[in-house]
Length: 77
Image (tube, rainbow, N blue to C red; front, side, top):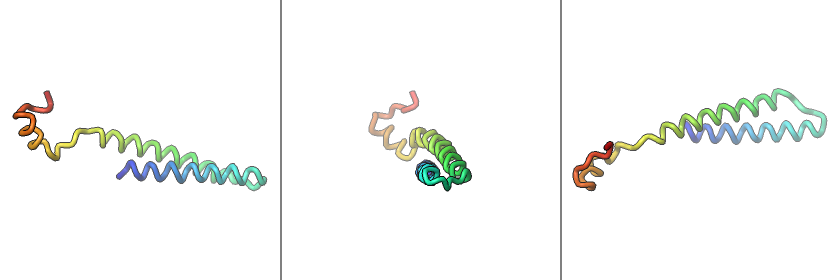
């Protein structure tokens, strides 16, 4: 779930940076938009990394069934 939030923040940050670039072209740029875009993207990257670490853990949901299927061997070894 946190990985999805990170993805959304990265997308919002990229859109904000594109908006900054477009407004910069017409000489109406606001530095706050650029800072918001960079900040949102950085927080998004941090959230995605945290989410990736949490999802990398092996699921223990069907651990007992896996043991029966593998002939009683322990999966940790």
